[in-house]
Length: 205
Image 1 (spheres, one colour):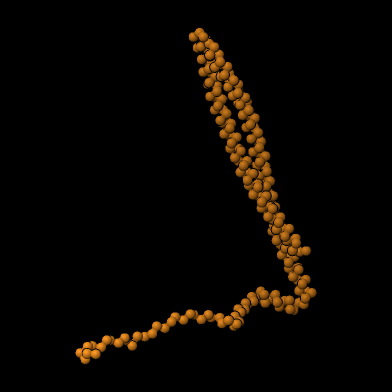
Image 2: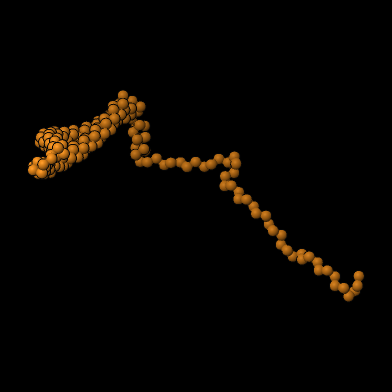
């Protein structure tokens, strides 16, 4: 090797080796028992335990049965009170339905002659139209035309009457529908209350 030639540089030796990442160790070691959290009884639970301990099994069972019986009877009173209120609401709606039904029938009765008259006017209009086609002389045509105008005036006046009665009938039908909807909702509430009462009866068996 030539003395004047610079020797190649050696690799640096001060590089710090990279430490591999370590996985987190689980808090719970396999096989180790997990500590159980104990619930602290409430004062009510402590009092109940004290009663049971001092009463003895027979008196304790009797007291628990009497308390349940008292609770059930109290709930039954509340539910039956609710049923009584619902019965009054039902009666009010029933009386309302009777009133609405009578009004509805009255309007239908007043409307029927108007509808009958309307049918006659329509038949007369067809007859006038046929007569108009047969009319040959100007005087005849003029008379038929006048009859047609008179009949049309009657039809328009009758149409206003019909609309008035039909409008009243539609309003009554809407009230009947609302009345019936409220009645159905009360029946749903009654069914729920009856189911609760049946459930309470089984608790005392």
